[in-house]
Image (cartoon, rainbow, N blue to C red; front, side, top):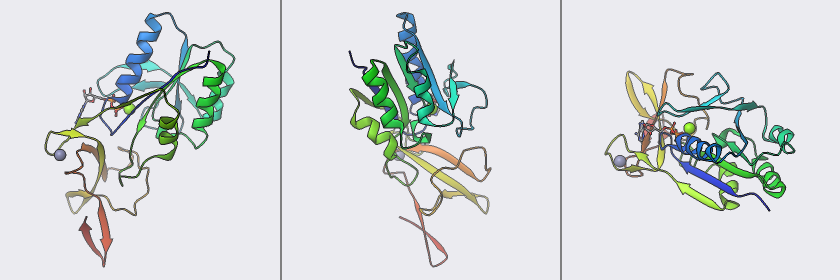
Length: 202
Ligand code: ADP
Ligand code: MG
Ligand code: ZN
């Protein structure tokens, strides 16, 4: 039988890693065997763990690229899981398909939108082939409503302002003291656009 694909998407702090861990733990209780993959470019946790902000964590295997996961295709795994899917390369969907064809279930967690409000293609391709899609929301840090988006803020003259559209898509929090992220609803979410040397908020 072919494998099932389950994906949890949402903004930062929405509980994607928590959900992935919950699903893995349930399967382990059911005596299933599996493996969690994380990508080496995700430098936020230095050891081989996936860690949720709620404090739960599980051992994971760090790989360089999506296709490295296929080394474990013959290991008789009941499931594999991929956390932070947006950090994986474009081949992720093919890799997921390979596990599915082999009969292995796949659990994925990833961001829906980048800070500019654009979908992550590799995540959305997995959504398209999923059997179960869960959209998680965080709490909007401005108004307290359900947050579906991730706000990037940059520090300028001692003030936190929305990052500009032209900024690079990936910027790891903590790596640069000038950047931080927070979940926001679409009404409170803003992206700055540089125009005539003046920052305009659209
Ligand atoms: P994700 O992987 O989606 O970034 P995590 O699973 O790591 O999220 O963390 C989710 C946890 O983050 C929640 O259970 C809660 O304890 C905590 N948290 C902190 N800030 C928020 C927020 N603004 N909205 C929701 N959860 C938050
Ligand atoms: Mg996470
Ligand atoms: Zn809001």
